[in-house]
Image (cartoon, rainbow, N blue to C red):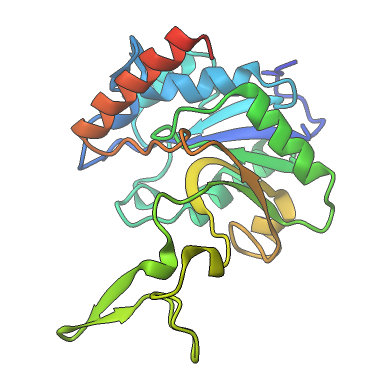
Length: 247
């Protein structure tokens, strides 16, 4: 059951959705329409349908985004300071700011934070809950992140050093870039769809993921990071496809 009260009993699991207003690649990205509703609404609605998430909180520096978030049922307990909403602001201080606010104003410390980024909208409540249970069942894990099988083998990737190619992954004595794919380690690509971490990971260890990160392996279809017009067009197509397929 989703709990929207300001109870002093700390919720075990909360969702935090970051949504700043200064997108450059796609202006107004977080509230741009996707499938007839603002982009951020997809993440809010999915979080609210979770059986394990108790509160859904949006951190934003933008009043319009805040209004939209509240309209779709999220809490927006503060407007994020401008210095925490720059192009190069990492997630760590944004998350710390939110958790410090909740502790100072409400006296709560959630056990697990579900971090949902609006540009990656294709996730289900069931996937979120499954990921939460994975983290709950591994007390040594600091965090969890969703991954997919990569579209390209990173062992076949190159950088340019000066004017010559250099293998991206260069292990002495092993010509991995010329060997068969089957001889290289299985790799995964972070798809940005689901991030989970424990309260102590960010507040005591001081970083977003800690040392031990659990994988949550998703279908390669679940790769969508909306950052420009072409991404939005592809997302519209994919949304219609999954709606037609009844997923």
